[in-house]
Amino acid sequence: MAESGLNATAAALLGLLHEGPMTGGQLMAAAGRRLGPFWSMTRSQVYRELPALAEMGYVKLGKPGARSSQPYAITPAGKRAFARWLAEPAGREALRNPVALRVAFGDHQSQNQLQSLYEEATEHHTEALAEARERARETKKAGDEFGAAALEFAVGYHRAALSWLKTVPGK
Image 1 (cartoon, helix red, strand yellow):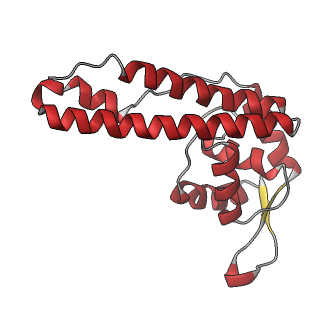
Image 2 (cartoon, one colour):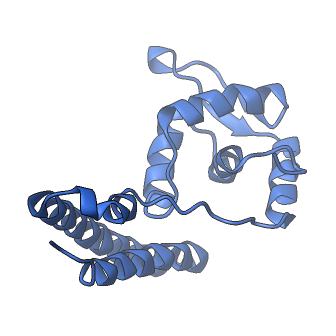
């Protein structure tokens, strides 16, 4: 855990809450829209972090709404913790690519298995590239140059993955 006391998921939630109060479901949707092309969060992570953030005084609960959903709002202490987190070194990413892992063991797979793996990965990265490009364009058009720059990372990642997939060995 960083000096701010925040892990990346908690920090991302605080960052999203700068936009206004949101329920856990709304935070999941906002994370998918804003961060999804380059940062993943699971529902269980979100619902585990929200009570912890409340206990630390970084978010406060609003009045329950429909189906007992509760909005969370960032507190001044949460804004300060988020600012401290932003000032910390970013650290190194953990590269974990399931396709590359399977390619590393390509000698143990049939030609059909490899072909299927490559086709599925190519389809995924082609679709994800188109989506990231569109989101980057929309975000830039909306005037969010930093959001657009982050989405350009996803564009570059999917381009690189597609380029790499053209070079992987078959059987």
